[in-house]
Length: 467
Ligand code: FCB
Image (cartoon, rainbow, N blue to C red):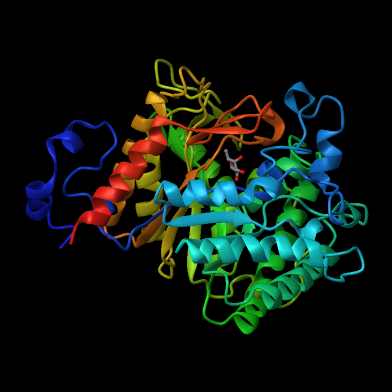
């Protein structure tokens, strides 16, 4: 048995004992059916924004607006993946990564009147065929934030009609790609789409109104709920799920007020999404926090939203430490002397374990989990053809150990996707923040495998070699 500790220690080479990544001998990560892969998203890597009939998305508009994205960066070229996809798939396969999470650009595959765009569809067909040829398991996200601009012009996610347009898109794409996708995720991180997009304006489309945010969230979740049965009908053998970013909130003290602050933070980040999906209701505390922002919910919506899921994708990056704001809300108290990443995010692997074990307690019907994103940004440089991303290596090892702890505590976690396969367009931070396990030189589009990716590949080779 690959996860039998004694068998593992017998076969481990002295080299692997010394390497800074390889998981502990008794880690569940040694199980061959624990999927280890990497993730990307269409707008962040594809470029070719005006090619082959692709329509503008809200991120084209937003990034072209002065002051919205660091250094005025846009996704116009990004990693030029639209033209270099074969090289990128070969790289993924060369690293021995077993899974690839990608997203489809809605404005690339569907015209404004709903007709299919053949050239855009063909791109994904070729890409998925090549991934299948290489034996890579595919997780395909339908919406990773690139809403067609023409839908934003008609009100975007605060407009209920967008949810129905999303269901049409899900229908088209799952008819076209049936049989070539292992797992479909409807949405990536609805919290970011709703709150950052419509609540504080840090992301496209850049609106800032609490009522828009809660209504956008409702329509995003409704879109998800409408799409799930469509995906089931068109592509019955694949898995269907959703990907959500989950935030760990810790209390700055033992006081009841600070404990409540941490609780409210998690309500606002996690329960806002998970309660509707898994309990069919919004958490009541949410509207104590944001009075007067209750969305308009029509009869039957909550049942639609709570459609059973095959998996839940969890994206995790950092924790937030909180105190009461003295009124009904919370305020952040950043801890001092802790390790942080290029984003300023605290490195806090226990948060991932604690969230996972907490969800298992809270939701009796918690579906199997995939960690669909985890990783960190660092200011990586290529020196003599190498990138020594030491901080990332330790980060990944510690977060995978946290996943193992959650599995040992009884949580059904089936896989983990590194964010990201390669450096890319990091939304409002542009190209400055490097999240990849592969370095991208944006001037030449040269890819350089970082040390972290080499070590992940080495581990996967060792795991594969086990009988
Ligand atoms: C997540 C996004 C992903 C990436 C990481 C760093 O919120 O889903 O696209 O930008 O953060």
